[in-house]
Image 1: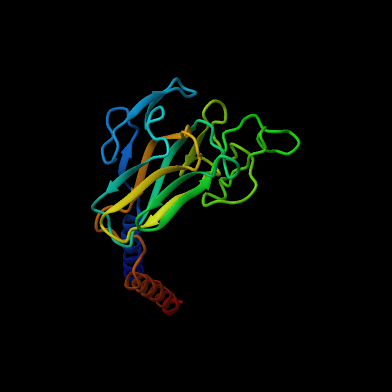
Image 2: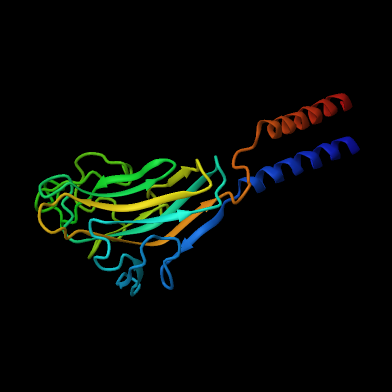
Length: 245
């Protein structure tokens, strides 16, 4: 009986360690109400939303055919980090057609593009074709953050009225974005690319940026040695029970 209790305690301890090392920690969070810490740009502004309004990085037209970067430090090489943020698009985003293409892009210095697609702000959509009233199409949908084909304007928008808002990393059905750190420093670059020949009028703003990871010096995946110890514990428990009976 003492041996059985020992094995149960042994396995419980190993599983506790595994659970601890895989738990996520918030390593960056900013709603831009008071500062823009970590970002390469500082412009922010108050924009209305369904609950009244809040401050957004980029505000109104601060980020038009432009980019802003978030630098993260102290990461664990080989660890997986998850990213969430809200994206607000303003102006006449033209999608993949005439006066475009108009891209929003999110690039990870470790993983490359996490979002790379065209967007259309035409609204309402044609009830017959499903496209915007001008016939423009976008390559973004929640299932194709790196670009698909033939989507109607504002496909995937979580707030479709006014200036559309897209949620990444939160809410049912929205894209889950992550990267595996190749260095202790990571640079995430949010940008818009407007190919319009005239003065660009498309702009974007971001809010509620959250990056979650395992924390410094943590192991995200149980190492083979740990799995082997668990297997030995289970084997020993089974052997002991067979011997008793």
